[in-house]
Image 1: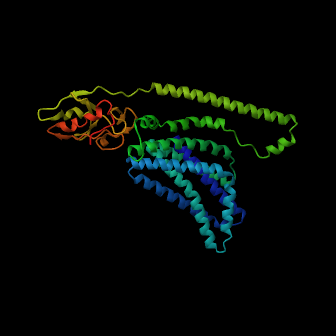
Image 2: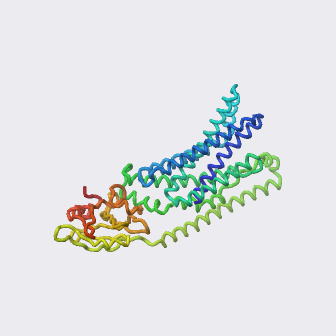
Image 3: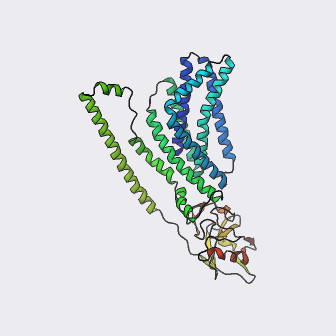
Amino acid sequence: MLEALVVTLREGIEAALVVGIIVAFLRRQGRERLLGAVWAGIAAAVVASLAGAALLERVAVSEEVFEGVLYTASAAVVASMTVWMWRHSSALAGEMKGSLGRILERRRDWSVASGLFAFTFLMVFREGVETVLFLSALSLATRTIFAWLGAGLGVAAAVAFGFFFVRGSLRIDLGRFFKVTGITLLIFTAQLAINGYHELSEAGWVPANETTMGLIGPLVRNEFFFVAAVVLLPLLLLMVPASAPRGDAGDAGAETAGAAARLRRATVARQRRARWAMGTLGAAVLAVLGFGFARAQPALALSPATPVALAADGDLHLPLALFADGKLHRFTLAGTGVRFIAIGVGDGEVVTGFDACRICGAKGYAQDGPTVVCLHCHSAIYPPSIGQPGGCNPLPLRSRVAGGELVIAGGDLQAGASVFAAGREHHHPA
């Protein structure tokens, strides 16, 4: 939830600053009658952003390719816009005023109004697109209700800021605010980029192997960088100094030899040392707590496999009632070393697959709540998708239900022998 709040608060405040600059410029020019075009541009940008969000909601987000592209695109857009804001924030107001001045120089009123509408729309819509992409990606990694709750709180706070900022009754340290939220956003984008690689590797779009999936799998499953950014936020607020007040340089020059100047410099140095000491101590404490939390988490393990044998007709027959509990059942075909899993998914349907995948080999799977997890890369598998090819899904194994039994052809089972043969874990049956 806090990730979404940070994102919408930052993007909302950026949009509010843009609107504030436009409104203040028009008022100084005595062109308040043109504010209607500005409000229309804002409304159109909000509607277009919401339409984009609705469109993304309608797309099937369970597909690895879509998720991977969305994660990667969100990371690229947010990172590039954050870096761009850092590099151009000091000159942004001047560039905007120059563009607005050229629009106001047009001779026809309709041309001026349309120019203001388009300018406002594009400036606000840019922030809206960035927000929609990021929130859509966040909704894949966190519970949707919490993501949108955080987004709502962030938008409400940004609207309140914009209202008081335009009225001129609010003053905050914007430099410090954008530094802290910028660092936080870049940590968020690292998580999105890793998630994107993970999903695209499962879809076969980017190369992956047992080593790479073993490294990034736990980061994806535990949302490592999301958690790190949220935990580090208070430390960043502590360690990033406030912007120097205007006029300090002149005052310091006039009082260089004075006791007041020496006292001020000593106070600043003492505060800087205190910030870094507290920040270092806080980081150490968080590292110890994080390590302890990770060590305390129960490790998933490969449960014992139940030995089974083929019947006289050459097929394997298992009672269907065995899978009514909806839990993962692991079996091994006697004399072959072949392991497979089966899970009941309701209405008498049972899904089956070899206890191995295309990327990680024969490491096996375990049940973790409502999902099945690869024991090597910790990829979460939705049980009804077991049997579908690709990614870290269990390698497909055909089965059928007949006469109250789960029936698997002996030839299909024996075709998986190469997967579990020593030294050939990455081979799989055609």
